[in-house]
Image (tube, rainbow, N blue to C red; front, side, top):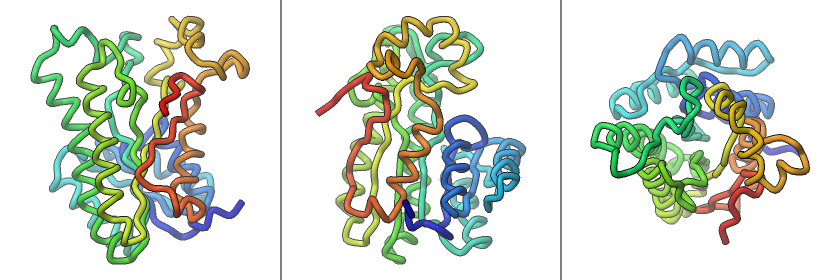
Length: 264
């Protein structure tokens, strides 16, 4: 199936590794030129090199997505190189678990949380999305073509204990996406979310190794496929929502979660 996005330009945040890097690689396989964002310049460039090594077109695009000026500078660099940004994938975020402690990294009961944790969570998830979308949306609207895809979480749809601020931030991205979709639809710009649940990455591997059997019980498809989510599952969904084939889909949340939650 031709997705119709060859020679488009994508900016993918938090893409130096894990799900973000897989998204970059999948888009590049469709002929998209990819700007690989990461907070750390060396990681952004390593990600871009991995895409180029596989035959794709990519550039490193280091920036702190929580800082509007840093994001504007990154977008200007991409525009100076490639002239446009057609696809924005808001992937940067805080993992719900870390490899270091194999427990929720944003976790703990809400009664024990504090402003420092809230600011970190909201800064990266909420302001990261706002800053990046604000920097590209006018250009997309002027060209009358654009795709904004934000990676959220089932925590933002159904809530998760010990992930209260995280659930709030992800839920906010859903509301943002629906509202922006209504604003920019007249310019042929679509805005959607993809909602994964547990996905096997370096950041989650220790947690999955420790509790894998218990985790899989909550996933209907895991019982049949004998696996949890993979970065490629999310990347394939991004490629579709970024494509010409999805031009009549906007303001939606697509769950890519193995059946973990089924929200009507």
